[in-house]
Amino acid sequence: MREGKRAPTVVGGISLLVIFAVLCLTVFAVLSLAQGQADRRLAQNSWSAVTGYYRADCQAQEILSRLRAGERPQGVTEEGESTFSYACPISDTQTLQVRVRLAGESYEILCWQAEFTADWQADDDLDLWDGST
Image (cartoon, rainbow, N blue to C red):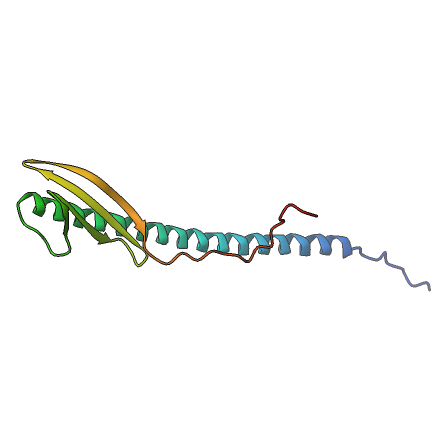
């Protein structure tokens, strides 16, 4: 009797295709997770920056209202005739600098800006082309 020969089942190509699909889905899942974590960190940093700025802005408004009421809060310096300046911290590296001029019942804001207070350090690590060959 002849033994019946079976045709070999060809699963090599299909197996490679399934492995490739699973690998692609795994890579996409890892990339999505990494992007989600980066978005979360960015949102937290943005929330922290905005909260710090508006906290400093509120504090600066309170100091301004006290100046208009005739008080001179601690940390306020008089720069000239009815011109006052003060700073409110936003974060470890930023402050809100304020300079106002009072004139009776009215006032004029001369400066109301966030300033970077940390030491700036240049990044000289890049090897740039100086224009000569």
